[in-house]
Image (cartoon, rainbow, N blue to C red):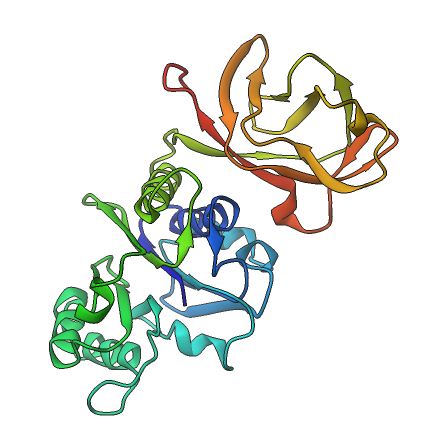
Length: 313
């Protein structure tokens, strides 16, 4: 299990979903396979959605879940042992426990460590105290854990074993009304160390929680867009981030009949008459008749943009 995130506050469901979807787009490695997404609803009831392959973008998540005040997710490569909710247990009216590596690994009492943390939370311990106590007893367990309670208390840590890894990323940000914690490993990003990915995901999650602009943002191909031959590659978007123009310096795209790269890495992103960013991932589409058509897979309709530092959202 390669990435875990938990969040509290308004739009926590969106914060968690967006962060994991961005990891699938920006990252390479053990990502985009199995995923489990969970919320506590307004009555404190636990709800799960899960998939064995295709990542969080393939989950049938009700729109109302994006507004959930408590949410969590775990994701990694495909085809993990059933039942998948063993990797993200929850208790009605109490808490969710997610993590990365092997959060279901048995502790010294032969109990899955995430279940042991959940039992401590049910007994009234705080998330941080519960996680710290379990890792103190099992320092060499291969797990990192994040726990969140129904009242928004948040705790997280890696075991001593996991902390020695060189491929980690982590982020935590919170104030009185909202916050999240994120842990990942074995997900690599093109522009530097693994922590760079955690930093990007942090901005995306915080942006969803606060309705504030993030340096990385999503662009979407929601309808067919015709290519236009130009001197350089350019992706044109509207104010909602929907792609409305694709300019290319590669004439082969105007006659291509295949699935391929319709929006090139590092292409300029324009809105109206101004440059607002650079494509941080590529857009894959079905190309036919000089037009890029959205694919069925929701992930393939998205790309990530890095906003220019001197451009406000």
